[in-house]
Image 1 (spheres, rainbow, N blue to C red):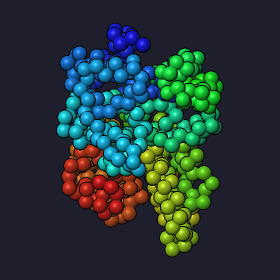
Image 2 (image 1 turned 120 degrees about the vertical axis):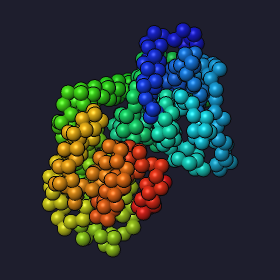
Image 3 (image 1 turned 180 degrees about the horizontal axis):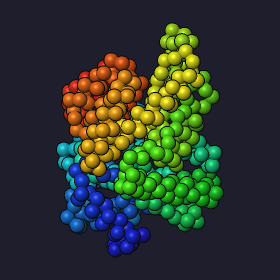
Image 4 (image 1 turned 90 degrees about the vertical axis):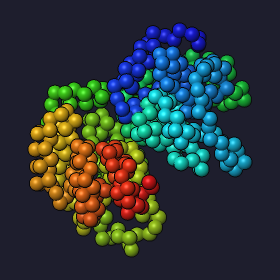
Amino acid sequence: MAAANPPTHLRRTADDFLSIIRQQQVGKLKIYLGPCAGVGKTYHMLVEGNRLRRQGIDVVIGYVEPHDRPETAAQIGDLEIIPPLVAQYHGITLREMDVDAVLRRKPTVVLVDELAHTNAPQSRNRKRYEDVQELLQAGINVITTVNIQHLESLYNIVEESTGVRVKERVPDEIVAQADQIVNIDLPAEDLQERLQAGKIYPKERIETALANFFTTKNLTRLREMTLSETANILDRKERESTEQETNAANIGGLGQVMVAISSSGPDPGRMLRKTARLAAQLNAQWYAVYVRTPSESAINIDAAVQRRVADTLETAQKMGGLVISLKHENVAEALVTFGQISSESSRLGGVAITEHTLGHRAESQRALDELIDKHSRDSAFLIAETMAWRGDKEQAFAWLERAYERHDSQFFNLKSEPRFASLLGDPRYHALLRKLNLPE
């Protein structure tokens, strides 16, 4: 790969991203997505960073892992590097991105390699994608890299296709929310040739990699997944854009998806991944609903079962689902009732939020008034969310207090819901997190 004169399509995508970051205040995310190591994600990210820098954009490297690949290391060039944090763990020296240093430096664009990476235990965030989310909320634009096998919803599919259990995973919604996605692809034969030439792994790992992960079958399947996921994400974005422009009142018209969580289900993770993928294909909101019957009260089930349920609901939340916990004697009746209530309230909240976004204040207010009139007792959290998105902080906090007092089943989504971004700097927001025993 030559260092000079990047291909036309890369110059175009760099120019496209440049136009995006000049039009906004909140940080934007661009992802170089590939089927596996060695296709050139980091290389192309650095090429774009240098191009943006030559155009006068303030670009820094937050973290890059060149993997001892000379052609990749050469692309670092004159880019400023934020010195990494150095940590010791079981006698091993680890280097992590210094999030605080990046926030203090506050560049226009930061390059962050390996989105799925798990940080050292001493780090402020457990996962690198959480670091990236923090940078985006601070108004810093991020360009990053990730391989397809790290998407949470593909865990079972990747294991069945390649025999590999991927430990480091990224919630699908992180990738789906990216403002730009670039698929970096190479034929299986070219990848194997690069591997044999020592351009991907050290010599001692080549034979093992060729015999296991880097087989033609595995690489072809991973390439297919990458192309399919990229196409699906871009298709959903196109549909969302068209819906917002032509018929905001039909928000949620593609339906909603619900999965019921059991304390004794055989493989809840697989069920969550299937639900998340179905919802993504339908461009629909999805819910993970757990009905706690009297037989499953805290005094009737042991701590291990309680932890299993809590872990399942946390996984659902990370995958983009809304977590609902209900108390009822009859599971089926509770699920039917929830479905009837959530359909109308979600539609009204969606209309109020979308109309406000489009500048239709009167239409937004009518939908909000109807939501409050019909669902003030069962949708306090949704009303608070709508108020926060409309910029009415006082009303948002008032309705959040009501949601807390009424044990609103959606309240535990407070920290993960991006529409509450306007409240993040307010002490009342952190007080609510403490009430819920959620990390601040």
